[in-house]
Amino acid sequence: MKNIVILISGTGSNMEAIVRAAANERWPATIAAVISNRRDAPGLKTAASYGIPTFVISHQEFPTREAFDQALQEKIDSFVPDLVVLAGFLRILTAGFVEHYAGRMLNIHPSLLPSFTGLNTHRRALDTGVKVHGATVHFVTAELDHGPIISQAVVPVLENDTEETLAARVLQQEHIIYPHAVHCFIEGKLKIENGRVHIVEKDYS
Image (tube, rainbow, N blue to C red; front, side, top):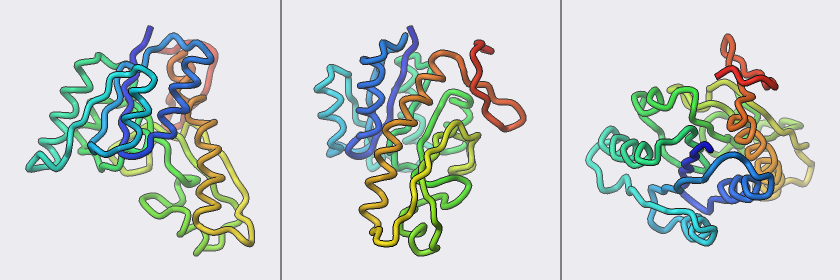
């Protein structure tokens, strides 16, 4: 049985999608904890409703980013995680933190990476006039939104799309591809080779 720790900052809809998939598909894994950097994150109540232990480590209570990351790391490591999942965790993590979880920390980004890294992805997609948009699940590296890509989902950009309608369609796809990627990790199906991720049937760990 593998341990998963999920980090959130907001509603935690991707977190809930993963929790539901883990239960419905009977993953050989436990959601050991959900941790937020915000006390008012609605996702904390959602996690608690599933009986998952929740914790808050507020970045505002630490003088530096490094100090916050160290406290966060200590809390995460207390659960001996096999995987750390960023599910709308709105903090830029230090290189040391990322390195500590190298190869076992995933993120989902609301664009088709490498396009539109950073924030305001849906607005930028509309402003640029791209015809397709989407979401990307990737391993986390020190370079923001540039880790090896595990999976992507594509949605069309419609003529009458607003930032809100486009975001809603992308989020629906996020709720599909993120649980699938996490499940593949738990089953040992993800292999990184020359910066590319391959989904295989054999456990290469």
